[in-house]
Image 1 (spheres, one colour):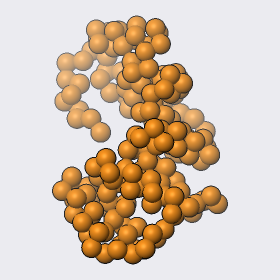
Image 2 (cartoon, rainbow, N blue to C red):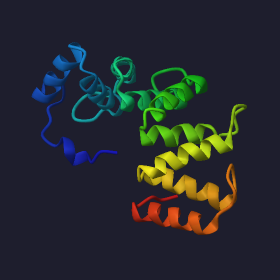
Image 3 (cartoon, rainbow, N blue to C red):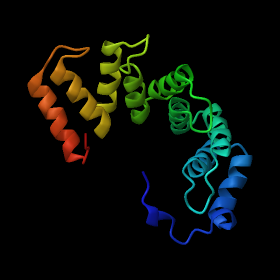
Image 4 (cartoon, rainbow, N blue to C red):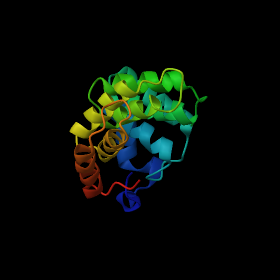
Length: 175
């Protein structure tokens, strides 16, 4: 999440930064497309919340290889924000970004593989949680620790679970 004061002084659609990013996005810059998609998704920095525009910018960015955009499209499909809720599409986007090493997507995919769906795979989920934890992602550390504590998808290992949970807590993770 971003701090609200990070956008203090931004004038929204008339802001020079927004205009600059729009020009870059129109030229095919995936980072600018993702930047705009994020702002439209949340409605921050004076940019109005518009989940349809968010999807369009994120889709362009994902097609141009931006893993953060792939992850955010996974979130949009998981929750039905601006698009119809679609678990399969969500998993597809999460997996694409996760397999490219994006820690938040590794955690998102692993959560999807433990949600009670017909394709759940706790062993695979643990591998993705562990990959996320290896990047020091607080959610990945916490979720790996919980799976190790409970012996879900992996042999129970209480000392390792405690170590991971402590690392997650040190990063201010809250359950």
